[in-house]
Image (cartoon, rainbow, N blue to C red; front, side, top):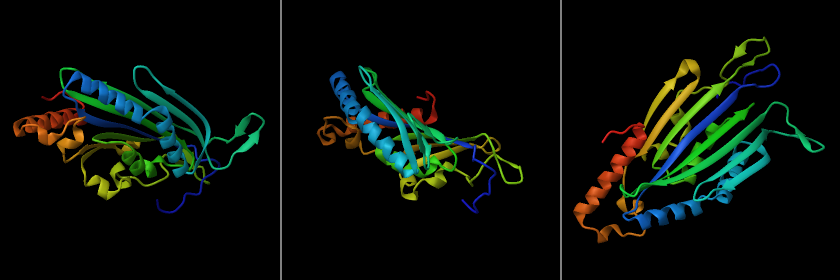
Length: 252
């Protein structure tokens, strides 16, 4: 982070971290696919997601102002938490938190198609902070909170603040890559690439898990009960699915 900046007034910079996490599963029959969707939907219901986000709020030193959560039919859940940095002053039914309002949101999207034998579970998370708080310190926690096969991350710093001399500051911390804020041990498990626009303070990173242990991707099936040729075919299908999600395009 370097030397602390001497600012005039409040830090008006908004730091937004958005990322998608994908979990892929091989479900061989329509029933297995439905069972997987029901299982993953139960594992990551709004109650569990609320606990993950409130822990994240504690990690960045913020306070929870309000929580809205919802489970959907047939599947999916959403949680939105309004947060503020530092101390707050009660004022009747309101909270005086000056300009440091921020929010954390999460939405889940279980999905499958009966012809592919593949099911995916996508988590969309957005953390927008204003003031001194930065969401980058929570990356390892969030990645570890989900089964993360493919991850896409976007970090954007918006607005500007001023130093005591009135000089505009469009970035208040050093950053070269989002990867610099992820544990090296975590990065070893993934292939990662960056697309950064430094002039716009926009940083993008994509990650895809390197090793596929087929057993970890089967639902209610033992990999060693399957013929070797079928195991190889299924592993190839999983890898192709991950590559297309990672690349954000249809390739095969």
